[in-house]
Length: 185
Image (tube, rainbow, N blue to C red; front, side):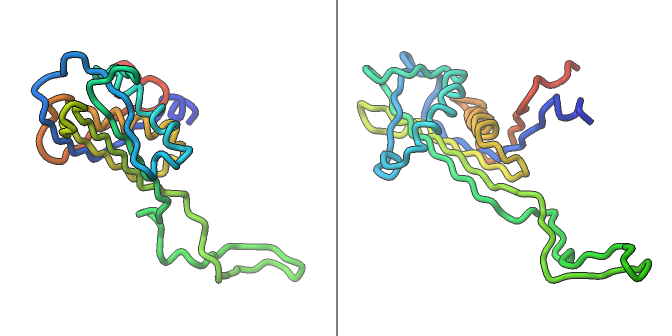
């Protein structure tokens, strides 16, 4: 069981990207751009730090002093009901031994606590600063039980940038391994 945990897990993402780029731009330098609400959000800088390595792997270089592009990142996480939750599992039953002997019990009133389930979305929008034209836009979504945003969101940014600068058209599934390195095949 421990070996299964040590190898991490596969994070399946639904990704859709739109590109006006034919190739990686010359001098692909960027700075982060923030909306007014993102400027007021103390978590935005942490989110940008989670996206920065994925942007670097895609060929972008951060340069706040002399950027040619701006990059706006956003993310949303919502805890939802697991699709595997049993709507009829409101009541429990069991065997027990009490002060008067052995018996079978049936109880209810409170729903069973299911494992947490999360719906996440990440987005990256790249603008050419000289023209303010959007040249790349990508979105990734994921639903799953993984609770740690510090592991899941960077993997989702990697998934969102798969195929950059010429991603396949239409929605697609992109799997990213999270955690320890996958076993050699």
